Length: 85
Length: 135
Image (cartoon, rainbow over all chains, first blue to last red; front, side, top):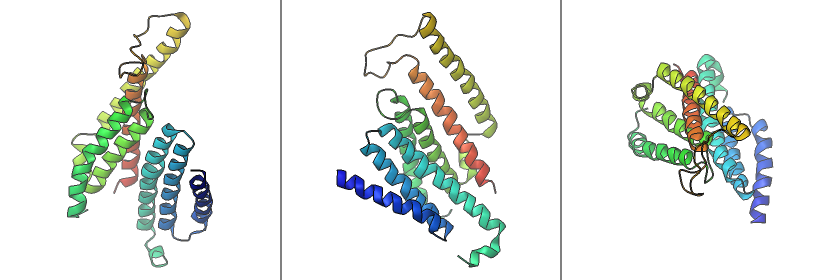
C-alpha cells in the first residue's frame, strides 16, 4: 500500500502544478475535481474516513459544480473570449 | 436539459443519493460521517435534480422563504441544545440517557445535533447554488 500512496502523492504534485499552468479553464476545473478525489483516497489511507467523506462530497461534488456554473456565467458575459479556447 | 438517458438515470439515482445522505447523518456518531458530510450529499442530490429537471421540480418541495425559516429555527434549536449540553456537563444538570454503546440511540445530544446540522448545511448549500444558477 505504501507504493500506491507514493504514486498518489506524486500525482497530486503534478495535478497541483498543472491546475495553475493549464490554459483552458474547464480543463483546470476537471483536474481540480480529480485532485479532490485522489486526496479523498489519501485521507482514507491516512485513517481519516470522516475527512475522506467530506472531501469527496464537498471537493469533488459541490465545488466543481459551483466552479462550472461560475465559468458558464463568465462566458455568457464575455462572448468574444469563446473563440480563443 | 432534454436528454432521455440523463432524465431516466437521475430519476432513479436521486432517491438513492438522498437515502445515503440520511444514513450518513443518522449514523454520524457511531461510524464515519456526520451532519456536514450528509448535508452536502443531500444538497448535491437537490442540485442534480435542479440541473436536470429545472428549478420548478425542486421548488415544489423546497421554497426559499420556507428554507430560510427552517434554517433560522434549526440554528436557534442547535444553539440552545449545544449550550445546554456544555452547561449540563459543568453544573450537573439532568441530561438525556446514554443508551447501549454502538446502538443508534446512544450518545445523548449528538444525534439531534447532527440532524440539525444536516438540515442547515443542505439548505444553505442549495441556496448558494441557486444564487449561482439564476438565469
